Amino acid sequence: MREKQKEPLSGRWNDKELILRECVRYRGLLLQIAERLLDGCGDADEAVDRCIVAAVKTPVPMHSRGEFRSWVLRLVIDEALQLLHERAAAAGDCSSEQEIVEPA
Image (cartoon, rainbow, N blue to C red; front, side):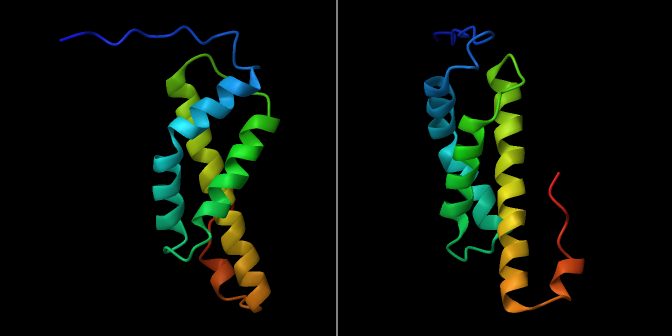
């Protein structure tokens, strides 16, 4: 069996194309997490899109794919929670806001 070669990524995380490629690589996982948090309401795609835009705009403070993966997963969780807050505010539902955890 062939071993996977680890591509050295440190020093290249300021490359927006690399960040976008890595986000696309994890898109399926990001979508699964967003769908679970949003109860499959259809906003999951929007949460993932917002996450990817934020990832490309934000300086990436890491040196490996593992660190990037953890960081981008946190971003999609934050975006999904933000959509839940927006949905609750639009519905005028104050009771559900107590159950929603604040984004980090």
